[in-house]
Image (cartoon, rainbow, N blue to C red; front, side, top):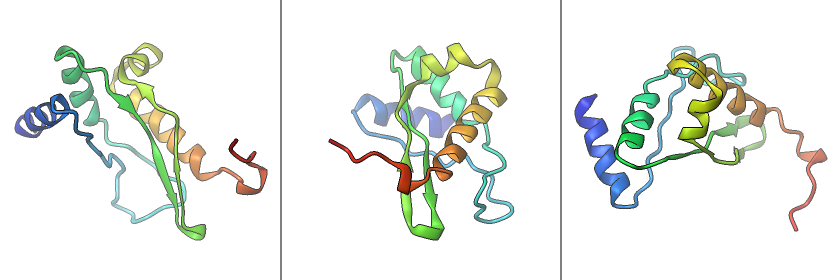
Length: 112
């Protein structure tokens, strides 16, 4: 884990993006995800120490209509302000992800 965080920080410093899939896949692909592993917080905390405030996006692929949703980004520093502890951060993002999967496409306003 320590080496992968070090390598991730090096890539972030080069301006690259990192994609993390924190969901627990033990039961296969579920319409409502049950758990996010909180290990991503180690990268977020280390990034802040290195002067990098990560934009965190959640995404959800809805299999039934082949639609990919993305949330608005939240800075990791903001996530730290509204949550306490690794598990609460994971739960907050899990809930955000599951809310994306419940979006009703028929009720969306067209983009301008």
